[in-house]
Figure 1 (cartoon, rainbow, N blue to C red):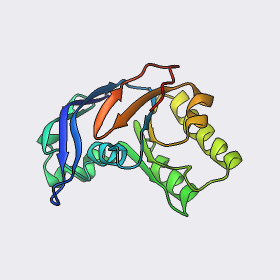
Figure 2: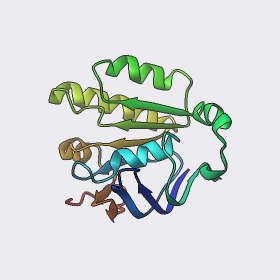
Figure 3: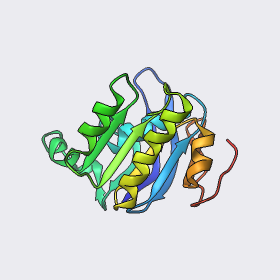
Figure 4: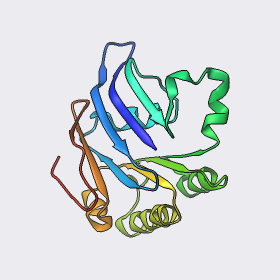
Length: 173
């Protein structure tokens, strides 16, 4: 479903957000991207959604190399993708992201501004999408939520994957 192969991302200001990142997320998997602020979590999600393009390396979504998708093809590509960003309209954002029943749902710190009870309810909602076959990738700092759901954890540090994890495994950043 998602494969990163030696992906590098350097921004115009010279900051290298990703350096040789490689991992794979299978169809129907629930995976968490974790790591400190600036580790590269959001950059990975932007590459998946074709908001950004890699400087080097290859990103594959559904066995399609995203470098082959021209700008005019991006809207069609995104029809199978739900994107949820952290903001004050989280529930409207989730609803908008899933109304088209996407095969892939990505979320960037969706519970960052929520109290623990509401954060758990939102995560249960993402888990329900996953249970019906949607691949879900969530960037989060919330280790307690990750432990609660026992899903795979991909740990980032300094723009590199430090642990690609396995389902049910929880490792320290």
